[in-house]
Amino acid sequence: MDRPFFLMTDPGCYDVSYRINPWMKPDAWTQAQARAACEGSRDLRRALESAGARVETVGAVRGLPDLVFPANAAVVLDGRVLLARFRHPERQGEEPVFRAAFQKLKARGLVREVLDLPDGLFHEGAGDAIWDADRRLFWCGYGPRSSKGAIAVVRRTFGQETVALELASDRFYHLDTCFCPLAGGKVLYYPAAFTPAALATLRARVAEPDRIEATDEEAAAFCVNAVNLGPRVVMARAPESLRAKLQARGYALTEVDLGPFILSGGAAYCMTLRLDRTSAPAALRHAAE
Ligand code: ARG
Image (tube, rainbow, N blue to C red; front, side):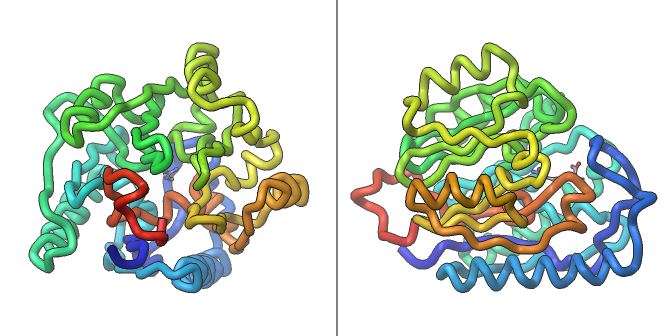
């Protein structure tokens, strides 16, 4: 198999002009932020490329600023794309744009199948269905954005195990804001984001030595929203405490200035969507993961 393959979106029409999560601050948005966003997006892409990845870009669309978060566009595994349905009307206009983008990828042979979610369910893509390549299952967040009922659709569509985790707060509204499986089986997570039942589920599945807990400060810096490629973890600027924790466990950090995206409640992981994930056991995969 080839290099890790990501989708990103051109940040040309990105801004913070509405508020659908508590991090979003339309009043703090300036032209300088817009320029910094373009640089941040470019630096993130370069960081992924230097880690060996290939990046495909979706074009910007005026009036759809959160299109820069393609993690929310779909769940993708084995070349199958399960399209998202957004909870908030502000983001529903992204659905046809991403559908068309995936159809184009299909025409080019870069994905195999584009599938719809049944009516009446919300699901915000890989933001709430995170593939754990070591455990070979989807960790699925629900509550603030994705419907609990959509998790069974993810399970059936991909024929893979799912573990449901209920999110306790609007601040950590997608699973990817508070949970990040890392190569080798470790998991970086922010305990306060989960209901007590979800926390018990998580801890029953992940042995204590494999748990890396993020502090309030680390979670608020959107560092749990990270992209992991083997020993490398790409994330927004990290507090020293987190850098030390990850380095002590053998991970190498690449930090990118993503301040303008944090103003919208997003960072590295949700600015990307991994397209090349497969369910094949590790022995059948190449080292790229
Ligand atoms: N403003 C966007 C929203 O509220 C940010 C999405 C970030 N995505 C993510 N998967 N965390 O939907």
